[in-house]
Image 1 (cartoon, rainbow, N blue to C red):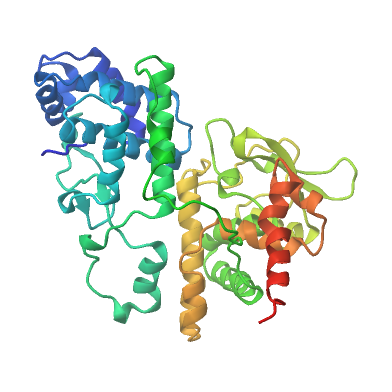
Image 2 (cartoon, rainbow, N blue to C red):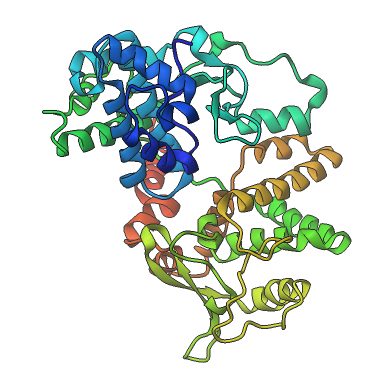
Length: 439
């Protein structure tokens, strides 16, 4: 297997790093026992003069100590750094620490149009699998460094909206790297190489120099309005989730989650259990002014903020949800019950679980739209994510509160950010002026 995965799952990377540090070229080492094929793979490069073990150790240390706690961020950095390392070893026969401008430039060419044999045409496969109940981690032969998969909108269109028109799986020849992915590749690789230079493992970081002259990058940035749900679809959301919860109490949590994200302008991570914060009902409280309720949130960048909670949310969402959990109608001071508890264990849910619930909620609405023969509206939300709910709430609120107040509710560091996203005055003024130009 020429392109063998070299990093395990995010949760197991600290263990993998510990074993690698203690390993040697002796095949009887614990690392060799747990990762037999990876151990042999590294030995092959070592025998040809490439210090693959040191490269891998630096990568695992980077993922363990430098990259943030977000699983999505960790995966993005892991995928890019791992691919670059494999490219250096296999295509350039060199250590990452010896790579230079030409190597990075050729790497970008490589990921822009990778060999077909390195592209998977299914979902991303796990890199390693356990052997029975042992600690042995066996390589997954179906893993590939690249994957060509349908977008969420395409997948939902095929499965929920027009399943009768589902064609064959996408061919590898259609694989292409879009501008966003290319920018992310540069950004992730830059952070990794920058870390190596700051630790004095490399003399310079060639990534930014290559980016400046990249023949694939399109320069400039146009205004793209935030994705939102129109009023009719949002009303259908409320009706659909309320009906679903009336029929099956399991959907009470879906209803509460979706309404919270929209009405309180929340990011989905702000209701999820994190290493440094567990959202609990005690974070809801009446403000000292006596004017109403607020919710204490730990947001992006671990910044704390207060979100105002409308009376309608208290009366029609929070009380109903708490009663479905067997709790008193209103939160108590210092109440430690998680806001989003597991149905089975009562433990606070992580973001992956909340994402799944939002997807299930969107699927319910899509099915309702298809049933009503509103296929175009169903297609319009097929690619929607939880962030559409926050954007919808913020966009609607612009007619009710000032931009400064909205910035505080959203947790933006500057009102300028809020204006640029939701108001976009420069863009709107240019459009207004443009439509009056003479022939």
